[in-house]
Length: 144
Image (tube, rainbow, N blue to C red):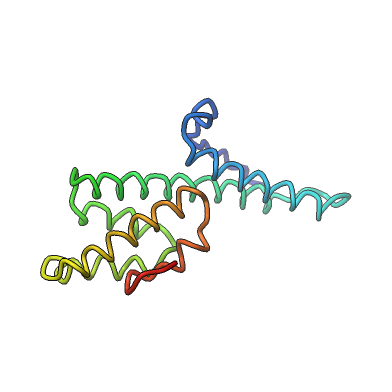
């Protein structure tokens, strides 16, 4: 049997000041608690541990993606610097509309304003851990 050791760069002391980590950790711990309750009395499997580790790694990728989006909003970086981190995610596919509409935003101020408001909503949804809401944002029109 081969055992792998995975180190995840997560500093728990930051969770009080970093709400993004706090929200995501809360969701992951809730998920783990629910799984443990469903599996009470059964032998713990490595697959649950692997899923939790995968969740933590994915959480870190999402946090890095949000940081890049905020830097883009603040005009510190270009959209081309956000794309590689976005490609690492297996989520939020409608964000491709925002990426590919860069030329339209440059020509149409109303369309740019709509998409940038949607980007604000998108970031807020991800930061709150509401991935379902983030996935509803298509960037093709205003969402509620």
